[in-house]
Image (tube, rainbow, N blue to C red):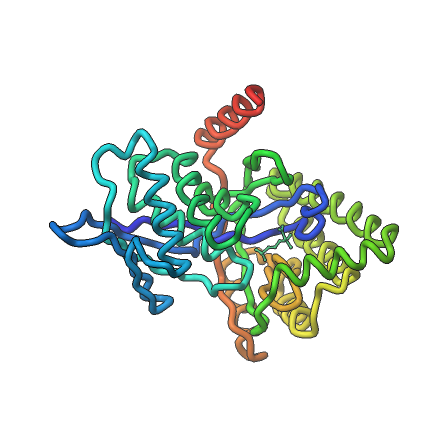
Amino acid sequence: MQNTASGKVILAGEHAVVYGVPALAVGIDRGARATARPLLPRERARLAVPTWGIEVSEDGDEMLSRAFRSLLNEHRQSASSRKESAFSVEAFADLPPGGGLGCSAAVGVAIARAVDPTADIEGIQRLAMAWERVFHGNPSGIDAACSARGGAIWFRKGEQPRPVRVARELHLCIGHSGIASSTKSMVESVAKQREKRPEVVEKAFSGIAAVVENARLALEAGDVVALGKLLDMNQMLLGGLLLSTEEVETLCRVARGAGALGAKLTGAGGGGCVVALVSDEARGNAVVQAWDKAGYFGFHTRVAATVHSSFVRERAAYDTAEAER
Ligand code: PMV
């Protein structure tokens, strides 16, 4: 059985989120998939990721091997793992790595689902976090949460990610600037600016906080036109923090020219990816084609509208967890 997982896109709030401002992220329908089978006698647990041209065993020293071991160990400790604990896993990633789209978390979530098909969302997130910690040290958890849950998430550092209702299916285009983005160096750049000119940076963060709050309301109201304008505003504020590049600006301009409702960089900036909101699939194809003509790779993806009953369940679980904290 194929086990799938979403990639993630930050719709609003990156960078400011590092300083306690909320961010809004969505799980997209492009991500990763994995299959697992129990081991044959004398076979050792192994993980193959053909997309990355890598195959490792559970007991190796490579980062991928350590991440796989960490995920399996977490699985072995969980109550639901009495039966199988050693697997041969094959995983595929449908996202560009290093593009701020949560590629490693999506692969981790797909593997977790393959290894423990009966686990609930929290269980899957726990396994995926064990995997993510090997790659990212102390990740915030937003990537794994988006990947495991899909839909939209309101996220503030140090708090549980809160599900947000998506009233109307979203059509997004993701364009790659062709330049790898380094989260660490872009976060450092903002920190330096904040040291030098705290009042300017704090003003930008307040603007971003307002954008995030309004974007959440627009998502819940299904108002994609307002959401598009908010993406544009967020891009302006990020540009003011020197996080945009010529390529990112070109991608945003071309997308708007092809009919996008709004566009911004997503993730760390300084390269990486752009997200453009469009009204429907036809407009999405037009944006991707326009990018292609301008020499950039992109794809169209969706965020499903929230299914009401599962949202009510999810919010109730969130509220209970909050009350217990
Ligand atoms: O590009 P990504 O997925 O690593 O996202 C970075 C988001 C930042 O806000 C810039 C950093 C962070 O830790 O939240």
